[in-house]
Structures are given as C-alpha cells and as structure tokens.
Length: 70
Image (cartoon, rainbow, N blue to C red; front, side, top):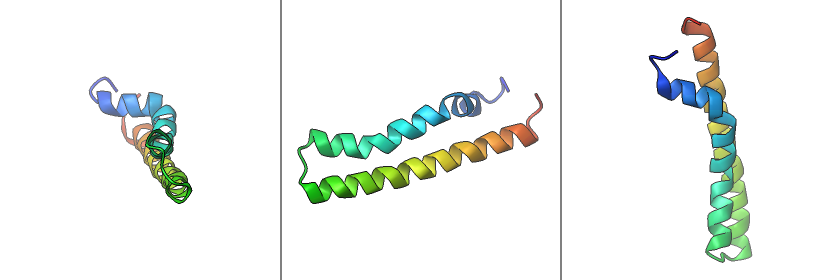
C-alpha cells in the first residue's frame, strides 16, 4: 500500500474528511451570516456532499481490500 499514498490517506482518514466536507457548507453559511433559507440550503448541501464523499471513501476501501495486496 506504500505505492499509493493518496489511497492510504483516504482509507485512514476518509471518515473525518467526509465529516469535515459535509460540515463545510454549513460553516460557510454561518460565517457569512446567511439568511435562514440559505442556511437550510447549506444544510441540505452539506448532507448531500457528506453522503457522496462518504460513498467515495467506501468505494476506495473496497477497491483497496479487493485489488491491492496486503
């Protein structure tokens, strides 16, 4: 796995990355003092972004488990 450092980082820290990226739109909306409607849209966008990043991390984990030698 030393040949693929990016995959190694995603396997190790993928959950944290998904959480941080999911919370990012909400934090930006709060930092900018957005209106409640924009804040609601940021929450929805954060949920969707977090879901997609989390699914990508799981796909990377499956690929590394199945295809890369241990």
